[in-house]
Image (cartoon, rainbow, N blue to C red; front, side, top):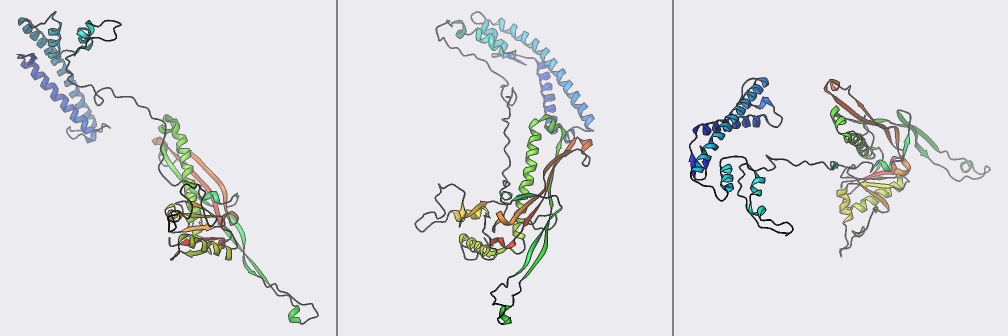
Length: 427
């Protein structure tokens, strides 16, 4: 049926056509909802057959919707003509007839002409150019389907270009304190003095008693040591399209992979267990000094460990590594009257403990403090720096349009004098 003001024109054919159109549209919407945003036909359970058969059913349903829409449009033309004729019989036009005509157009489901409605309004007709103001008018227009973001014109947004990286431990906190050298060998080989017996003493002249004139004998012995060169490596699978369609993707990957290598190196220099293919980190070097925290405060235990390094290793610690969570308790130490012991909060770094530079890093075991004379008795020997390569020859990457981007480096970590290093345990 067709509505015009308070009058009703009975039109069963239009009603049936509209109901059929609504039903077909609802069926199609349900199928597309089942398929999801990827239009996966395997997810559509309301249709039978394979993907080809289901697509054919969708096509048929869409054709039916087009046919139904044509029928509705045809019936609407007849309905409008009938409503117009009936309205004219009652003389419902007002004034020049434009308002009544517009209301009939609108209520008959005709197209909404906003420009025409405004041009016929008092606001437009009574406007005086240059007056700066004019009468107001309200346009009685009902929009059946609101044009809004979900169903209307979506705004076009551009990315800013910023890539916010995952929060992760920064690299080169530890490696920066190892003197760096190069090597062309597969291992760094050196000699360590493992016997040093000094019996030097005063002797009398030769004409004195034999026991007083004999030179005391001392002893020296050397042992060959070596640290093998190890490889740190990783790779990342990337599609051809990523590098072709996004210019920044290649630079992002080329920067991120080397960062992963350096980050792993930092960890290995402190906690590597030395078992192939691991490097040997300071914590696992045999013969280093150890000091248990026990009932001591962290500053006291660190001082005792540093004193052992000075007493037995005859070295001066150049840096100490501690987890941020443990350094916090030291940094917040206060006197009884609330004064910060290790400096006011406004004090800027670098921080020191007993004159030893402090490096906060999560690369160190959280229950330990590692310190030592890295400046004089450690070395990071580079066989080859970080190398990044790209290939599609991995597995089935060639036929699948994928690339394998790999990065690696080869190096050896050496601690020449174990007693020049130490750990505080039990934090």
